Amino acid sequence: MSEIVNRVASSSIISLNMEEFYPQEERVVFDLKDFLFQELILKEKDFRKELKEFDWSVFKDKWVAVTCSADAIVPTWAFMLVCTYLEGVSKGYVVGDLFSLEQHIAEVTLSKIDPEEFRNRPVVIKGCSKFPIPLFAYGRLISILQQVSKSLMYGEPCSTVPLFKKVKS
Image (cartoon, rainbow, N blue to C red; front, side):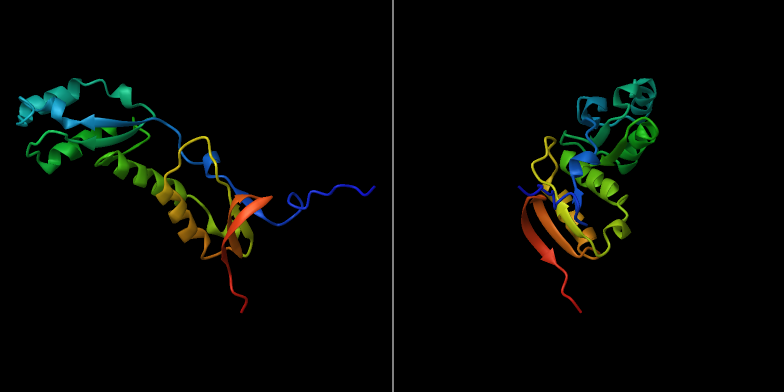
């Protein structure tokens, strides 16, 4: 009886599991509506006072979407002022909704990938993560890896769906 050899483990294939590096910290919303007079009007003096007295530690190590859900005219500087308080406390933030925040998180996270690690190598992007990774993050990952990799596949190393193969020149 011949020995069973794990060809996947001994191959040059790189298995990339986004779940291993994609941020899993909590995503929350900071709503300026709660700081408006009658949820309609921003009174600068009161607004500044409330922000100064606010317990910003509730956002420690969380990703924050700064928005205003009220149908009110809020000056741009108000959103910017909130961001100054989040800086250094939160994991990161955007002015926008949770979808915009998730796009920001994907961009920040994927910008840290060194494409040279994947140069001329076959890459399997693992699927079926336990943590929900947005579809656009996978699209962005492809845009980074397709430029350098030999091939791209999706799934598990033993059962993949081919996505891209570099044409030999």
